[in-house]
Length: 129
Image (cartoon, rainbow, N blue to C red; front, side, top):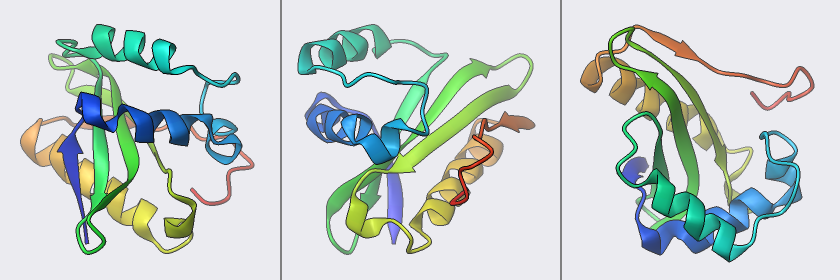
């Protein structure tokens, strides 16, 4: 159904559109819309950063990117990290794909990265989580 793929420069326009969507932005720690140049600066600083990773959620049947997962504050020695993400494409929301996205991400985090603690910050009025 969905798979997680590494973030590439070709994904920046999708990521920018999703992060600038007011419905997404209200749940992340970003209150102002981003410009493409800000997104590109962020991407350049992201490259080679082992403490922060973004994975694109790819819908296999429809062959399109629909969201992203964020792994932050990755502490390999303490085996912990913070996770977050969104289904950016509106027509894919409310179909259970967020749950599938997080299940795939947690498999990666626990089985491949060998973490034993994962943190998720959620706003108390975010009922979809």
